[in-house]
Image (cartoon, rainbow, N blue to C red; front, side):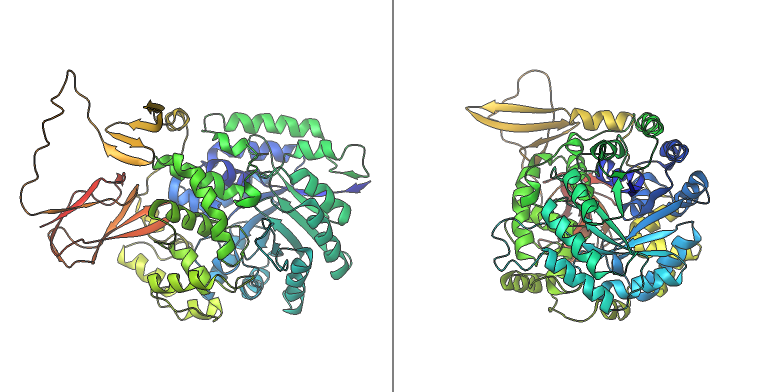
Length: 596
């Protein structure tokens, strides 16, 4: 029988796909130890969202977590992380010195292998990042990114086909990129079994004999086991599997499920299934107090038409829960297909999947193409590399106008290395300005995590993990109910003095007895003009000081929602008086400031 190797993705991709990577390391380490005791030796141990999220949500240092993972898994385990080419572990692309620092630090903190992909399949973004990985003494698993396109999207039929993926693989070989293995990565789980078989078969013919081929997918669209079987039959050596409670649904399929699918065949996972099932019991107990979003365990038949990867789907629904607008999710998903179709067919995997979702979110909240997500706009303009096909010219024109940027064909590294705001030097200056120690780790944290990284290092970061009471609140849906008036249904969520009705937030108060409904509210005095929140989110920072004189159109503060920064600009000239401070959460329509 042929042994099929596998990597357990539960402690990185699984966490991202279910909990938005909002977990505490001490809670899941007993499960890592149990998996090791069950004979598992290859773990996904960090990178991707599991680098930023500990800083953003758990008030933990990801480098410390990687050290702990190595200690727990043992010195011989293959610990693998995920890197996004020139984006390394963030949504923004980085300069050369930060890309090198990433590889050096991940080697220092116990990692063995880095899987390196580019969402646009722009091989230029893999050349230098791959070199840094190898130079650091790590194993390099280079990727070709996959997804399917809905019928009619690609009228010429030349994108996201077996032949297209073979072309990308040939570009990797022609570029002389040194690698230890090749992964075909389908984060959205939308590729058809036939496409997977043909792609792996073509790759097997192209690659030198003995080259390790890996296939990765999720269950989100219901295809994962069928795709894995076809990948194995076509010559794949290794696959990615997860463990309950973070398996199936938005995650990779379970080790036990795949073991069962191979029973009676000529292939084997070569595991003691009883020991694996015992490890899963330990893992389930570790995570029993965490909120398990219902959408994370479901197969969604819309995903082939809106290719949202599991790692982004649940993270986004959780953020929408945070902001009281989960009722908008279906509309956002409906709008996502257009963003993919007109955006150049970059693969829906981080960061591009987030760009698609953010743009669909903006199209839902502000109207079609009225407001561009920064990442999506820069992507169609070429600032993340070359998209598989040219984006819609109309979208390019609109993005250029709003962002004030011209389209570019320059290599991403050339752009970033010339940007004085990127790199080790500005990160060092930011640390010094905040009286923080200048270490390699702190420099990288600052470069990859921005202001949130600084908040963590200063000790002012806030914990936002749905565990215990926070999990119960999420499960209850913040007192959600449906109210029908004259045949019209209103989805209402009550949370303290806030009520969200069909996605729009209102301030509410309840008093005993009856009030005179005909009595008008007291008129506001003075000539002050009130600035209101254009959408729900958090106040990131104030751009001017209390009492400053501002001009109409000047940015007075920056909000964050759905991992996007939204500038709020003055509606008139005058002295600004804030009603919020940095860190405050606001609903749509909440007062932010007055201008007098």
